[in-house]
Image (cartoon, rainbow, N blue to C red; front, side):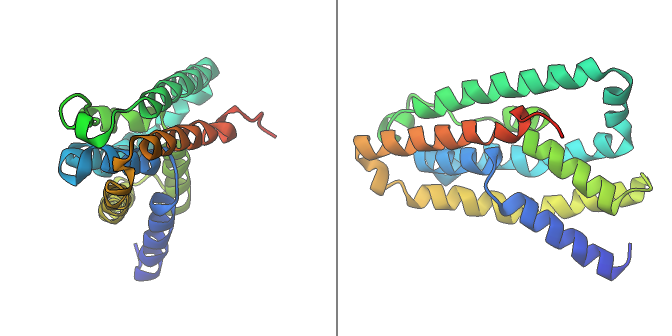
Length: 199
């Protein structure tokens, strides 16, 4: 991979991970409700889980969808149901003081597994592989995955800290309720591209 291609990949990865999407909205909500330290496993699950997803996608997981189109439909249905459930959990999250004892942020494994039902993650993985590892060479795929690890550190930290900074504003239960319902609504809205008919 030439230096020009690497910088293009880095820019693509940065823009795709830093923009709002299910992962970032959930990290900001977790930062606001649980703080940075308790959100670390969630951050690591996103930051490492997505690059770990890129490798099998790059090696040909999409061929399964070509061979059995019903699996693609099943993935969409599973994604929508899971994200609606997460939106419900976000909307009904406890106040920060209560959350420290009652609520639980996503674990590393939950956040990593979420990448497989996250529509934005699929779009990012397919876009990155198509543009920067079209040869499906394992070296190129690992470059793409490694670049996403680096950019993921910036993104997950930024969104979680942004949420954490809101904690003192959201100490008011009414404001927290409004914030959580807004985040839940945005998470549901992020499903619109998945539900829109193709073409």
